[in-house]
Image 1 (cartoon, one colour):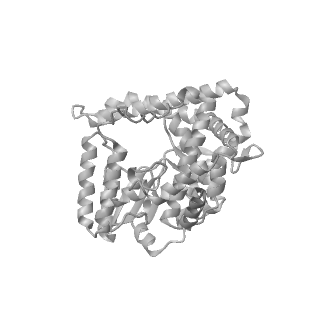
Image 2: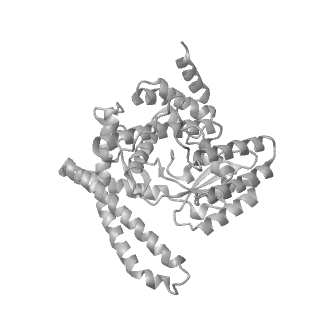
Length: 408
């Protein structure tokens, strides 16, 4: 997720944005305050030069220990939550008190350890970017800087008659599920739109904001993804992020493709034991294919998006909304319990990440994501791909570049 301007109050707001912000002003996330605090922290880390005094082996061990510590913290959080959901426990706060004290101790330790770990991962991802040709004189521009933290939520607003992201407003992270639902209901009923409060994995501020996680594979990819947004912000593609829905998809798909490649390069160089296995090869003609999963999330989500698009195109808004809600129940019954809502806003947000065909992006022949993927295939390296796409100023220009690459 890219954020080109730090404060929503500094954006040139149109009437529709102001109408939505009438419901969110008191709970909007303060990017200026967060960024100033993060820059101060990064300045302190750089002044200390923490990673320069630690051997390569010790650096990797510190990162892996941090990941293990985060796993322990997450398990404690789940255990504490059980006390509050168990109807047989009369005083859950008292029962959970020992675990809560332990959780506070571990969180303090994680805050201390994060200074070294973030410095190490910044250096490692920066080195990988350099090896892939994305640096000047050995230094990525801008330098890789990130801070793991609790991320803001995002209120996504779409029209009801089509799937399109019209608003993306950052909210404070502490809002409960009930508060999120009430906000959505007020916005929808007042403005006749479809809205959804979503959780995000990262924000392309500087330093970038990245969710706390125990998954190092995910962490390296997301830090790289958000750095790519910083890289593009200095070039036309990033500057035009908000110009149109197509430019947003181009930006996010580019960052997803490049983030995955830089993240994989980092794992291969520093944590080879964590490199994910390659996808299973396609069986040759005549050979029995691998049995598909009983419920294919991407395939079913693609069916949902494609059908909803068709119903909306026919002007059947209520039917589309009823259909999406019925499909949410199907996902729930097949183990996907995190889908609180399936509506136009859900697909407007998740459909922008089109580094793979299908899924929430809609039809497999979706032209925008497909064009980005084709340009990557036509490029000899990630360096060449980013240098070409960074100067794209419209979807039509991207199509022309791809068409030129297809000519015999």
